[in-house]
Length: 217
Image 1: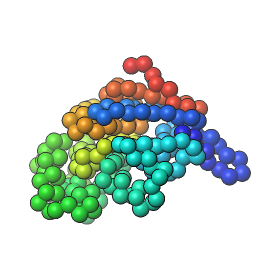
Image 2: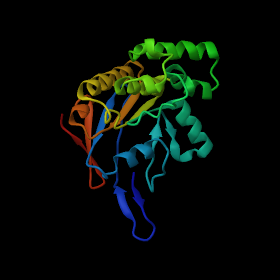
Image 3: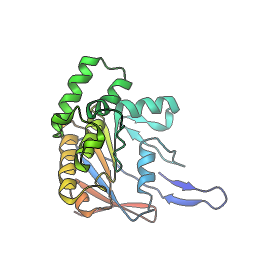
């Protein structure tokens, strides 16, 4: 996979990048700021388009899908965990987490049951009725992880998910994310600057000068 930006003087961001992640596996991608980590994540998610190459997720080739089909695939088969949480302030924790299920048209009783289950799984079952403004950083990130996992995605993408957390909370959150990815037989791709975060992954890759290389643990 290759990606460049700029029409007059194109800047090559990614050069012949190849990445394969198996079910039940979490990999970490590290690299300096501006190395293209977030670009790679956006390409995997179909939020951006590669200049060349193929992106296959759970047997689906993103390149064959139109915009509407990509949106539906992201909703149903992908989970996102962002550094800034992106919880909607006017919704309770429970309603934030169940939002992907509501958008998918899941029956209310089933959505309620699945939401309650995932909140308990991430350790914030007692906070379902709280609003984001009342949560600590660690609790907010747990809510974001619950939202990413509630639709049992084939792939979870996490962009600097511990950047706003203290070290203890970061370790807890990453352990939680890793455990849930494995228990739910999904796959996870974590983009991070943190060496401690990278150590929580099964494999670690370094993105440098546009090329991705696996690093020995």
